[in-house]
Image 1 (tube, rainbow over the protein chains, first blue to last red):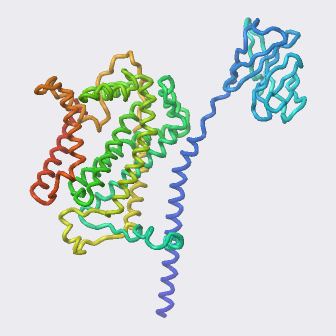
Image 2: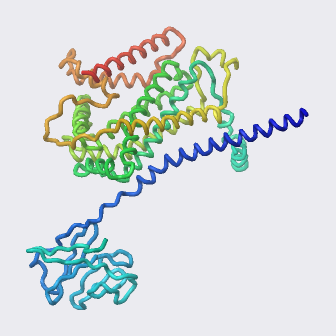
Image 3: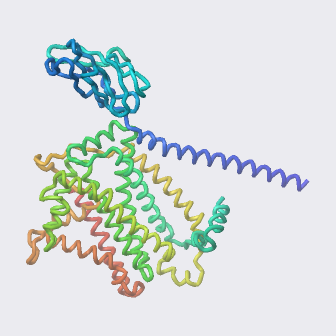
Length: 155
Length: 355
């Protein structure tokens, strides 16, 4: 009788100990999460807010036919090309391979990346070299004396 | 798990290397509570290091960007308000606990032989913390900080002989400008941390090496082994950790309920705003300087104040060497003088805060 009673209490305390251990452990875990969650969120910078607004890339008479310029589009460079026929095209000037800034070649009439010899055509498509994807093309509008570039209907 | 860890260490480093940690005992008596203040100060310092490093990810130390970058942290970065709030609040609580720690060891005469150097390194740490507070205050580049720094550095000009050199050195020029900001940034994140690491290591080593001091009233009983003790690991350490846990909660609550203001961006050509005041821990200095007349005896008032405080700080650091018989009448006088100093600081702080 006595023995089974003490066995009973032993089981009881073990159960209680388990419960207390569980409560304590989950409390500590929850605390640690609440300490580190803000830190993790803090170290990731807020998005600089992709500029959906129109960007003035150049003045109307700035570029002669068959020339180009790099302009600022939010935080990244854009490439504005005036084709030989006088029309404008604009691209994101960041190579899809490893993020180098591309340039327009007026002799070859193509877009070239100096880093790994990637070549794009004037529609942004990959002609040769390592780039995995075409360059993103922007919409170009002529508004009065300004060449305005926007991301267009892309969401 | 503790036991396993201990065996693991023992197998590699042999007996004795970490044994002091397990054998260390903390005396238990009426004044044991004061033993926790050092650990609390250390914890708040760690909080400062962690939040400081985090703030460094976004802060930009130039007059054109400093204010804006802090504004960015406060408004755009996720939990930026929390990290900066904790950094500011913890800085103030740190000075506060360091002061309490210092005065408690002073009145319990913990500096008596053989712990003189523990006291000296502790004083150096306290002065370094004041330096952290002073240099960090300027970094958000707001109006209050700008003028507080102007006044604070101007005081250095009153130091005899090298005053002007000191002024130019700390300002990085003749005026408080962007050069001062860059310089203070350097002090705050490189020079002071480096010095603090060294002095703190020495302080902690000395504390561990000599063990806890018991107040003179318990010394005899302690030597006879009549004062009960408990183990540093885990008994004392667990209580420490509990205190730190609570402190973290208090810090987060303070940061959330009483956000640290950023104020207005500094403008060197705007008039100094009314009611300009330094941080609370410099108030007693500020108030004293306001009260000293233009000329004391044959030297300038400001010079007199700076000399007096400089001498006071030096004497304070040398207390263990001046108080040679802590239990004799001299020791009692030292305690009385300490009491007067505390009363003076309290009165001047309240006065400076209200006036």
